[in-house]
Length: 496
Image: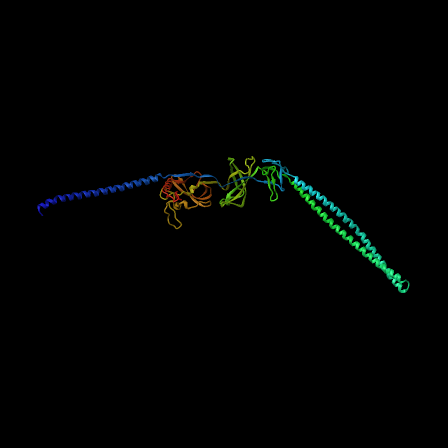
């Protein structure tokens, strides 16, 4: 290699060495920067986790010892316990009204009158026809008595003719025997024969008269019976017309208060097809009933004797009380909704409850006296497996024997997949000085927001702070709500 070539390569070698040193320095700086970045991320993550755990707070409520009542809500109508409708059994025009709404009436008191002129004319005509029928019956009876009296005389004539015939026959027999002996003439015998023929004719005439007398008597009796029957029928017509005339006066059948008047003076009522209603009378407005429509899902828990409290629109701040006396099995279906009528009796001494008022009722169907009562949220709450304070029991075995993933054991399951019902069991968490203590309980009774429970394992007393939510679950719920997908119908699909 020449001197010239060596002089040219010397600077290039120096440049190459300088570049290598620069590359080494750059590699060291990137490594340091990467290490620093990893350290910063680890420190930030640790701080975030620590702060997150330290910021988790629990929302608690105290256990209360009280009587818990389960109830069924429904609406209904206030009605009098005993209501009587007064109608008319006859047709006619109302000529007089003696009572009005709210009138106090007594049994037998006149309420209204129907024009009696037509009914009076019918009664007069029936009475005249009865008198005529009675006269005809009397005449027929007299004729029948006369015919009956002729029967003995006709019988006596028959007897007399029979005796004469027997005497003539006896004389004929005697003279015929004397004629053989020559003591009488043939003329005498002929005379005796003529006497027998005459006596026979007289007997037949007497028998015919007797038969006629009997027939006349029998015919007279039948005519008399027919006339008497006609008189009786006419007498019944008189009684009917007289009763109709009496019914033209409308009277009250009971003591009570008139709550409805459905007619006015001059109005015509027709009773030919059905009995028209004129008045409605409530017997006792101090005894009322509330007819409540209870839905099909709730009717199974309603029984007679259960207490009822209700309000009416007229007195929204006053609570009225009653007792269920009847659960009617007859259903009412409106728009495919089935309801059953529950009858509640209630005293109304002050007369505040009026017929037709709308009542909003609450029927107490079950109660747990002097029970430990917790919010329903406490039975629905379950801590998250990896956050918050640690419970005393941090592990549990599943039915297969494998340990669950959550330190809360089986209680780590989401409550949304479990149904809380009366008679079942559940778990609540007591905040005991910074430590969550799970307590297994038996659920005795459930209302809309509360539950009466009895501890199965662990202790539970009035005043214990039980957890119903935590800040972590609140943040998770807020995040889920914010990021929930939009529904195709314009809303959001909630997370259940």
